Amino acid sequence: MTQLLASRSDPINQQSRSHRQLATFVDWIKPEKTTRATIKTQAADVRRLISGQAEKDGLSVLAMPDSGSYAKHTGLRRHMRGEVEVEGLDVDLPFVVKPTTEEGERIGNLLNRFDVYAKASYPNTPR
Image 1: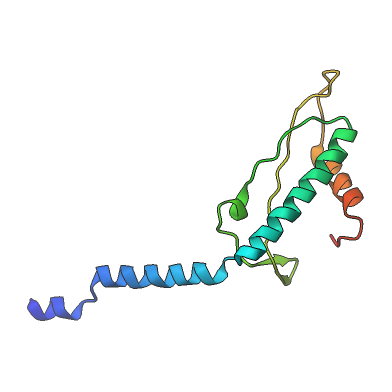
Image 2: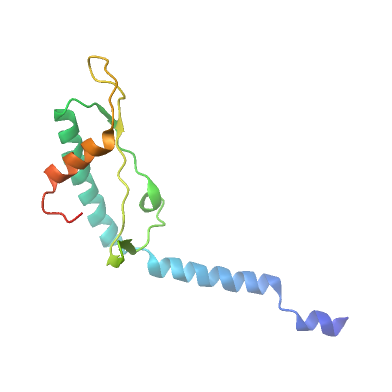
């Protein structure tokens, strides 16, 4: 019995080892603090430009909350665009919009509208 116990790996040590490996990986993969600051500034600019376009178009932008892996500090330094790995974060920027116009008309498809706003704000960005 004693020999059997001695031959098993200790689950506490294994858990600690895997936890250390995961923590090291997370520290390695997360973006640098300066990168986060740059992204925060760029996200504020995107929000300002896109919400400005939306408001010109008669939409009421109620909120622009932080969301996704970037907001939770779990964003990866790399993401995929098609079949190509891209260095940088994929940052989600949601826009909460009032569902009706000032006249009370229900607003339809917002994705196409926001795509137009993004193209108008950033015409040289590849899509």
